[in-house]
Image (cartoon, rainbow, N blue to C red; front, side, top):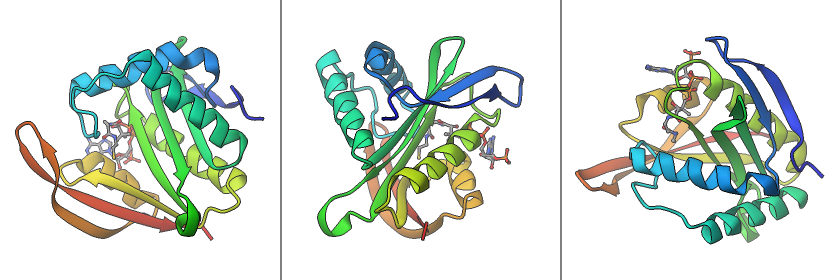
Length: 185
Ligand SMILES: CC(C)(COP(=O)(O)OP(=O)(O)OC[C@H]1O[C@@H](n2cnc3c(N)ncnc32)[C@H](O)[C@@H]1OP(=O)(O)O)[C@@H](O)C(=O)NCCC(=O)NCCS
């Protein structure tokens, strides 16, 4: 059982203390506040202002705690001084795609550009390689305009395999959706 298991304690490149650990039931409120704040920021994620209720976030957390316990997902949270400031995960798909894990990552505004994303991504991939026996391919989707994320993914060996023109419809226009993948086995 990985619930709340700590995988890293250290500092960001700017010296901020960070703890990276698996989620637990007690994180529900912090997780809801975190995603809702990111959504309001309208950054490079699929939530663009939508707000999740506590019940919706509970469904997300409960299903992930279950998937983690069944070795079907990895989810890590980053904390600084007790505040949730980042998350990342890999979720295995189902049936004939059960060897494919979908990757996602976010770091809170105010904590970006100081090496936390790279550390978190390293840990999520290594936890997934250890704990998800079915995992063979990791895929992700990224806004074509998100240069920071695309650079980071390339450094981790991700290769672009598709570009869905106008795949993302935002309030102020369309953005292409880039798909990348990396083989683990
Ligand atoms: C994308 C994101 C997760 C990266 O995390 P981060 O902590 O900011 O990134 P890091 O400081 O670890 O830097 C990661 C790499 O990104 C690249 N990078 C960072 N800042 C950059 C910048 N200003 N310009 C270009 N590339 C940059 C570099 O390759 C860097 O690696 P390096 O420092 O070894 O050269 C984070 O910025 C974020 O959450 N952004 C908003 C949401 C988002 O875009 N999520 C991803 C959706 S696909």
